[in-house]
Image 1: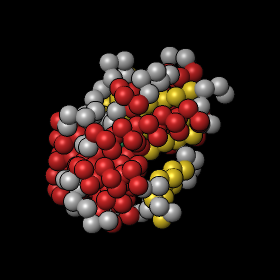
Image 2: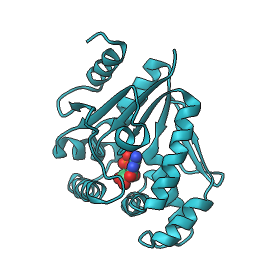
Image 3: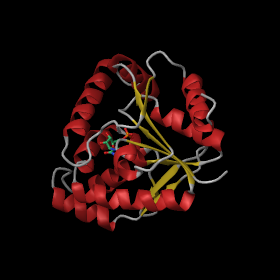
Image 4: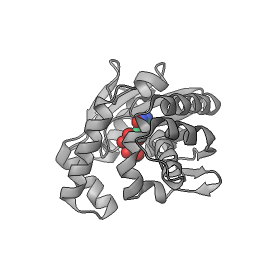
Length: 218
Ligand code: C5P
């Protein structure tokens, strides 16, 4: 039970959150959802009435927001300025604005520094996001890149959110495009990442495979 950092990256709907939480529990490790951090800053931006496209104003809000992230894989939590925002950050308003906020370089610098401190403090932790293996924790013990077909990802998300399939597919395509084409730390596969396509793999299979990779059984 020494230090162990696992980086899990990939687009939305690739199964990152479920896989990361289950793997963290199996490893008796902590779990950090970096997407929730970008979402919480976005929530604070919207609450303060700032335009998500106004990089300067967004940076100011990000710097002034007190984020607290709970890293228990069984009960992850986020508060922004003392407000529990776990539900609000999954809503359509935040989801629509988060790619603009996360494209601001100063916001990324701030959150990446916070993420590194949290990883350091936890020691054993599974971290999920878009740039974890490439930027946040380049020395992770295991880097995973999860993918799945666009159809499978839209299907999963629309079931999760009880939302319309076509609208969900359009939103995912829009976020994928924004997240992979931005200049600051775009979504990308670290060269040394293990790539797993989860289109037809069950969650249990994916978790078992990653667990085996870490414990060196295959
Ligand atoms: O993972 P999730 O869908 O909750 O992430 C929400 C958004 O946060 C992504 O669409 C992306 O814009 C941003 N994000 C990021 N870097 C991360 C994690 C999330 O830019 N490490």
